[in-house]
Length: 102
Ligand SMILES: [Zn+2]
Image (cartoon, rainbow, N blue to C red; front, top):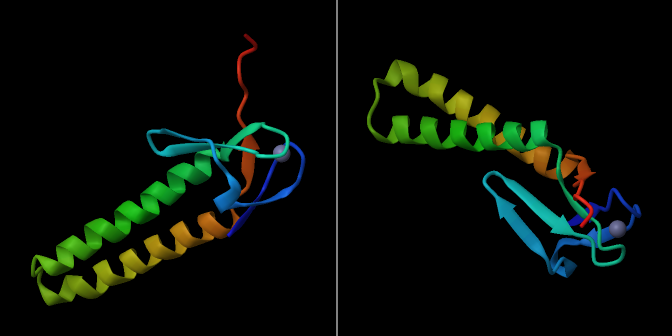
């Protein structure tokens, strides 16, 4: 999988990114060519988390033997969650992370 650096527009292979910082649901990555830090747009990161949560919750509800008339609804919601998460993963734009000058 490749990401586009918002700083130098280089296509970076995710495997080449050495520096990664995790901050809750946000992941910051450092571009190996221009050393700028970038992360997924915060709204998109939130949408992705929501999508994954939706899948998890609906799967759990289906596994716990909820009445069958709801299981189709939960499966559909879970499917929507997967689609949202995948769309964000593949089409989400990265943004430069502003670092305070020190
Ligand atoms: Zn770059």
